Amino acid sequence: MDSAITSLTAETKSMRLDIAGFQSRLIGLEQRVTTMEDHINTAQDRDQELFYLRSKLIDLEDRSRRDNICIFGLPEHIGGTDIQSFLRDALPKLTDLTFNLPLEFQRTHHLGPKRQDGAPKPLLIIAYLL
Picture (cartoon, rainbow, N blue to C red):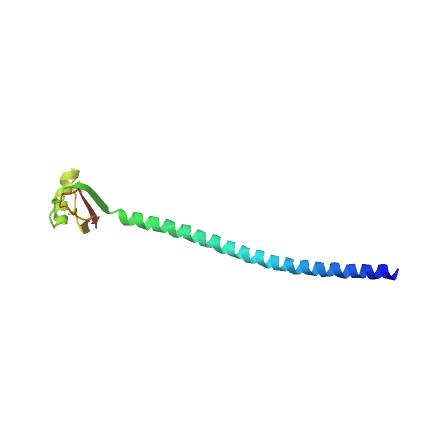
């Protein structure tokens, strides 16, 4: 009978050691899950902030374009060096509109490089109105 009790005691000790090992592994897993949940929450917060910032960027880009006029296809020689004077004269004629105030521009410029072969190209003018 003593051998049976000794055997049961040894087996119980072995089971306790196994349970203690499982408990320590479970504690480690719980810590890792908590850490991962924190990372997920941080990532979700950053995702929301990124969405907000992208929306704000799109809105600001749209606002910056609202006062722009893009004119495509003008011959390269039109307007010479004073694009603003040309646009002040040409826009009312081209659009058949009358403006109550004189057209004022923040800046105007050509887009794109001149052709290397010297051939004329359609001109793109960006005018930023005040």
